[in-house]
Length: 618
Image (cartoon, rainbow, N blue to C red; front, side, top):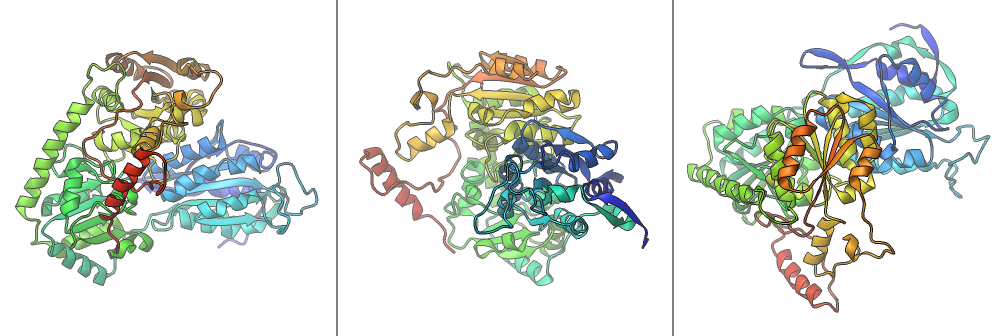
């Protein structure tokens, strides 16, 4: 190892280090950091700003309009890349930093690697309190960046320039570990960013990072095989881990060999193409009848790469077979051991292979496989019906989804996050290639959609990316639409904006729990002037091409045009706030008040208590 040193500021050391970290994808060596998102302020412009300028030819810096938005884009990028490459984000101190916290939580919940570099207060404390500093009366070490601790897999505050050496090395370990990966926050004190240190040249040597595939314990494999061999009605639940492990072909071969139907979580959708006869589609609260009918009967659930959250399990009321056992294959022991599962702690691709080696000779009963295939045909008929254009004055979300699917086909990547659309898309979107269905539903974060679509497009510049977003989410965070326009044709996305004039999804949930229509739809809210937002003009003001479709037929025509536009396009369509797909689905545990003067709430409470009896407690 070289004993030579190079004198750099701490910020320059960060930038140089990031530019020298590499990975190999499909035999090609690439920088593992695809770039840095930056909004400069007094906490990072003179330190990180100057440093990033020096490496701009090898580590591109992207200017955003909102710190939360750019961090969503970074998270979406790494999700679209199946966690093989990622991005960094740098901000000033105070509000700039705190704007990233929500997006950090998105990455944390969804297990996505992300490097956050917020500016921090002065380590020497001489100018305290500095502009935007949060002071704690009882703890002099606290700053606003402590808010990142609960949403970071690794957190460090850099108060001396040499501390960045172990901190960055640890950051890379975390972000490239399939079990630990998630956001890393390195809070960079603003004075320390500009301080110089004699860094060893070896710290900046090029390093190629590979992604390990941990193999499961032999006893865990044996226990999993024994459980599956005893099953008469097995199902596979495919989660995001199947995609991140690039195990989709392995899953397909495994399912075909053993005749096991595959049900998909939000993160796992597209693990099998919709056209596969064993692909039952979505499971749980937003599940298809094909998946949920099987789940209620299943005596063995093989959960691959999923954390089995409440939407997947119907708040643990979906599984009705008293003898049902779970086999959970996951890189993270925390997830593999949930709900008394038979744990298999390891990589999805390797785990499927090793279980296959010992399971050979067994298969699910043919009658079970046949029942699954028949259920899929029945569901397909129901799906086709609700997605058809129809003649209603205001189309449903399902009809809009049908129009987008017919026009762009399964080759497009659809992006969405929160509200009613994720449930409809989970049921109804017919996914093609792995990763072509991109939903942020771990944190269900309103405002992710447009920024997320931008991140996906940066990861897939040659593919069609369509963002489906409701007016509520659009109003929360739309500024990265302007960023996509600024970045040109390679960042072109198509946004389908469904305007139901309020928070239609939560209004339906409010009604379902007996509540009065209150404060969700605009018409039920307190205001002096009835809002009439012109989303077309708003999008045009940010440089996008925008138009309004008066019907499903017009929507399809505008979608055809959007693919030939030279920049991002927004298509607005008015939709019905109350229509949702009734086929499929399952109960979800949303508490109903025990006491209320409203008869509707009292009735909803009685129904709620009946559903609680079905919850599985282990």
